[in-house]
Amino acid sequence: MSETQIQSETPKKEKPEPGRGFAVRIFYPLIYGFLWLVLRFYHWPTFRGRKNLPKGACIVCGNHSGFADPLWVFLGMRERVPPWTMAKNTLFEKKPWISKFLMAFRAFPVNRDAIDLKAIKKSLSVLKLGEKLLIFPEGTRVKHGKTVVPKSGAVLLAQRADVPIVPVFITPDRKPFQPIKIIFGEPWKPEFSSRRPDNAELDARTAELMGKIRALGAKK
Image (tube, rainbow, N blue to C red):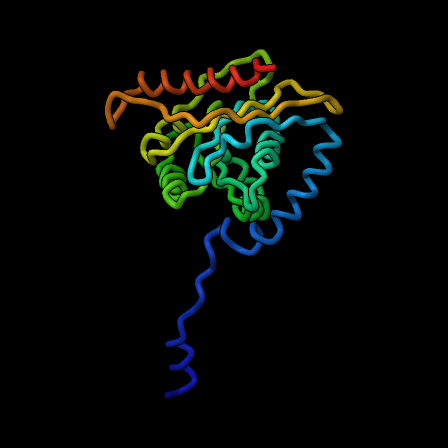
């Protein structure tokens, strides 16, 4: 057998899926430590309710008012790897290195203005593997006092994957060097009348979810 034949028959090692490779498992703990030092200096956080996070799959859903919201959730969860995180697709389109960095640390794009089947399949696949998923139902950063119509994707994914949602509140309208709260609520499973809920029912359960998130912020 020639050397060429041997090389052609030798199975090639497949590259790991983005988010499951060397970067997230080796560098994330280092990045986590750096973020802990920097963000705790920039704000004075209080973390509550981490015990409400189940060991297996769940969808973590929070209010969204600042760019650092995902980072505060990561710090509050205290996991060895970050949750998978839906992020708007435009973040991945600016520069290739930004896209690679985000995907290496378990972020994946979603088109929030359409039904993104690729993002839905990705979400269901990680949940079925027992992993956690972070979604901000508002879909964009919302200034304190403003409102938007939240997206119903989180409650629909929870039903399809049969996993709970953990609401999390992050203090909005925060100023540098002021205290903030990151509070995880009790796991909640949205209930529907059928396996194929209509838009009205999805909107109602989404409004219920946002109410749970806001209620956490009202607690002393």
